[in-house]
Image 1 (spheres, rainbow, N blue to C red):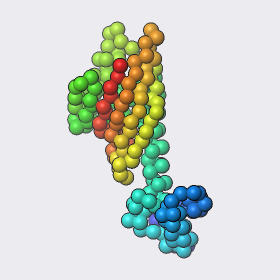
Image 2 (cartoon, rainbow, N blue to C red; image 1 turned 30 degrees about the horizontal axis):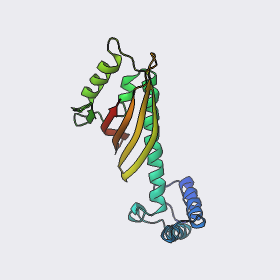
Image 3 (cartoon, one colour; image 1 turned 135 degrees about the horizontal axis):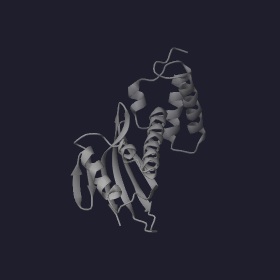
Image 4 (cartoon, one colour; image 1 turned 120 degrees about the vertical axis):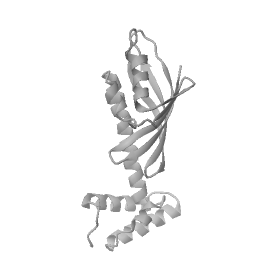
Length: 190
């Protein structure tokens, strides 16, 4: 087999396994045909071109999409953990640190990373306020391309006094060299 630049042996084995699985799984004929084509190319040492893999139906594209979804889920888990340790800076680490960050909430638009952090501090760490325990639920991640995603979900806060503020959110993620970051947040709560 020819040297496969940019891909590890593990990725190749995983790719072959997924191609075989796709051929045996009841799916559309087009999906099975694509899997067979990719498997044959890999076995012949003719690693398909990047163009081939960027096609939405390719197995490699699907693997990349699954990996990106997992990374985004990880970001949200890290945010939830930071919040639950009352670490607003850790929570904000996953937002794009730019004056172009947008945040819609309470019928208002806030722009900029620093403005978002200041708003969170005032609302949840100011005198007489608490952060509570945060839980994200019903996450739906839709990949818009190789470097952007749209996430919908619910947030639930449990406060010490028994109140349970909750609501819905939509996030737009963008993939930067340092990883996935939230570039837009629209949260609406009760």
